[in-house]
Structures are given as C-alpha cells and as structure tokens.
Image 1 (cartoon, one colour):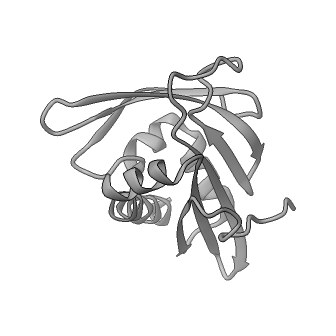
Image 2 (tube, one colour):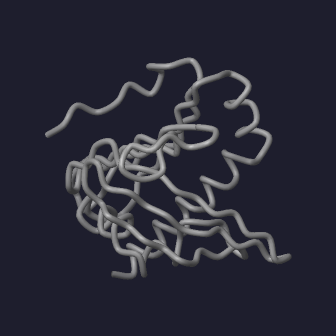
Image 3 (cartoon, one colour):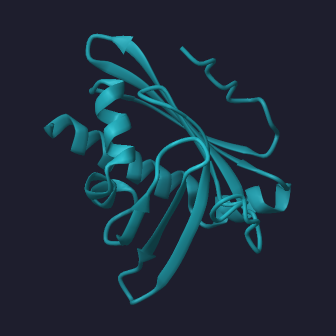
Length: 160
C-alpha cells in the first residue's frame, strides 16, 4: 500500500476528508470511468462534457466544466501517480506529455483508504504553489464545491 499523505504536509493545502460507505475499488472506478465521472465530478447543476481519461502515471485527462448559464471551463492535466484503488495524483501544471500549462493552479492528491466494514476514508488534497492561489480556490468555493462533489460521489458509489 502506498503511503498516505499527511494532510498538513504543505501550508498551501486545502483538504477534504469523508468516510464513504463503499470500497476503495468502487470509488477508484468512479474516478477512472468517464461515464461515472460525469455523474459526480462537478457540483450540480454544473455538468461535465468531453471527458477523456488516460488514467496511468504520465497519462493525461481533459474535460469541460459546463455552468448552468452557458459557462464553459476547459481543463487539462497529467496524472503524476496512479496506484489502483489507493491513490490518484494529478496536476494542471502540465497538459499532455509533460507540456507545461499556461498557469499551473494546483496538484490534487486523492487517496482511498480501506477502513473495513465496506467503508473507505476518502481524502482529497488540493496543493497550491502559492498562498494566493490557495486563497483564490477558497473564494471560488473549494469547501462547498468539493464537498458537494464528494457527497455526489458517495451517493453514486452507494448505488453500485
């Protein structure tokens, strides 16, 4: 098993933790299956489209976040580390094949720790380069948005 991150490892981290009533395998699948990702990854009424995932260390991802008023936010990134059913680390610092992005914002460290009884400790860390980026993410609604997405994820995997 990979080492779990220390939630206080970096001063520019934003952290979300949940206990989800599902196996790490079910949660990992929800992160790696494009159809499932569309069901939970953005807070409703937002939607996700054009999802492309190459979930492996060095692989890339891209998708568009669609707002209820027609907003469109394209996203692209690279997976830095993928340990099936345990951990996914990705960043927007690169787009594809280690091509730097115009403005890196954060790296996400997502872990799935089996705690027994069909439950998983789900931890999502958004690690920012600069304090200003961390504060921007807070103002964008990190806690509310990522919290709502975690609730949507928990509801989805509970159905499976």
